[in-house]
Image 1 (cartoon, rainbow, N blue to C red):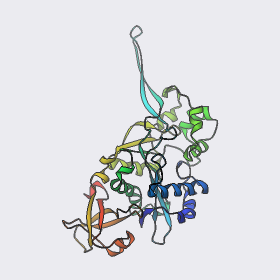
Image 2: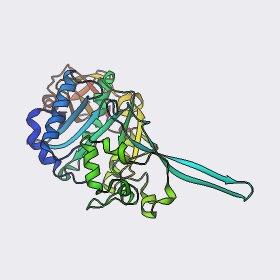
Image 3: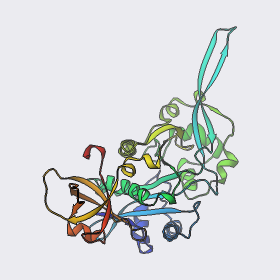
Length: 339
């Protein structure tokens, strides 16, 4: 298994993968035209012909048979050519000294505060491959790309986490708030937003603060909460230094987590070292290893142990990375506990 930059020849397998995502993965719609456009944007981004507002780097996880079984992506800077909306969770204080009343009421403010930040997006792994650290490889491989090419991205990185909805796509937050203004199902609004049709948000969404107490109990309970299938992804990002700072999605109220690019653990702690011929060593650990090539970026999971001369890597893995012993690689322990 290894992660690589997407290619135009991956369109059919990407479309098949997108059809299995279900509701909530808005940046990977099962739409052939949209996916072809995303692949084209990714290839132009790598080539340097896409503007920062358009640049979006898409990666795929390839299994031993050559099939694409997962995707992940990084957008260079969001909201530069169209509004980027979030709710900021805040407080409104109401007090009357005469009546002896003091109330702190939670509110939702529609904001564009996160305009211009880089975004982790389009993370999806086929259910049959959610084991053996494949999810960690797919997600964290993006951090090595950020570490090698930081000049292509904004200095802050966010990730919008999927909010709470059931198997049929029913979102309690949407039913209590969004439906009153949009008169459409959550899945339809989520899809339109995911494919870039965001103008209806500004046209229909209330611009004044929303008092959370006016929402249903079910809606209040899911603000800032993630879908049960997204909890492992959230935990993984928290382990890399990402944290929730009070911003949630306007449709399902899922949390947005953020971190300075240079403070992401896998970026901050990664090292450029020499690839050495592999010899079995005691106490080997798992490393993420990239080939540092912009136009043929690849990342593998390597079980080895760093030594002063470099990192021993097997010929099989070097072949997947399109490298040979003596080339340089970027490496970092898979997680903090591996360090």
